[in-house]
Image (cartoon, rainbow, N blue to C red; front, side):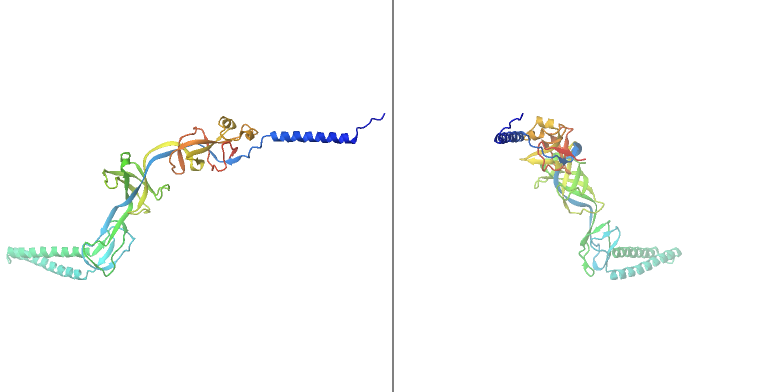
Length: 372
């Protein structure tokens, strides 16, 4: 028995209707599906660690050599030889300048001859007095003459020694203002010797901070505000009074300078360490700022994010596993930057794990992967 088929138009109509309905269902289900979450960013993570932070006072100081001697000759004369140059390192007793000694040497030679003659006469008349051939008065006259000529010779020999100018201390020879052939006046300075191995820092302390400064506090000298210290020392002296003009208190600190990198008269930025304490440290690169507020991203969980979602898009994040780590933005209160770290004053738990890489691209709730 043959079964009759429906007309072709009916079959086509039914198929089209079914396709349209299926398409609408698929389109509707596609519109209701949540968007995909962003791929996780790889970040560096580090636990909060304590560092020693200092309560400091930044000011300026001028370096002063502990030993500085002006060079001058005790005798005048024409410069015959210079045996050192500006900038040379010299030792105590080293011969530096020789003055013309021709005339003085001739005088010394004449005095040596006279002193020898008077010595012989003195000795001869002592024997004559013992023999009764001369009087005691004659002997005393010759003895006085011998003593006088001997002392005059010593004085001239001292003058001759003054024609040689020697270094009184170890140090570095400063600028020489004389040259061979110049006439040097006695007592006129022509250079100086500076010993830079140990310096005194003359520190200007603002008067309103004077009560916080005391002997023994550490001092750091820097070429720039946040650069590495070039030298350090400790305060050894506080002036009893404040300068009425500058309203600063003078403090002095002893600075060791074995390599000679620092110079007498040099002016440097100076940091006085008033007190030190241990605090949690936040790396410089982990901090971002918005409208004057400091923020730090820490490693958190989706559960923590749901408790404090902020403006994070939670819908796509629901498709992630519950164990997925995310970046959580936290407002913090920080102290002053020291050596690349901020002291944490408030805002984070002690066990927080700080995202130390740059916050560029991070948002509250961004999925992350800690770098291994």
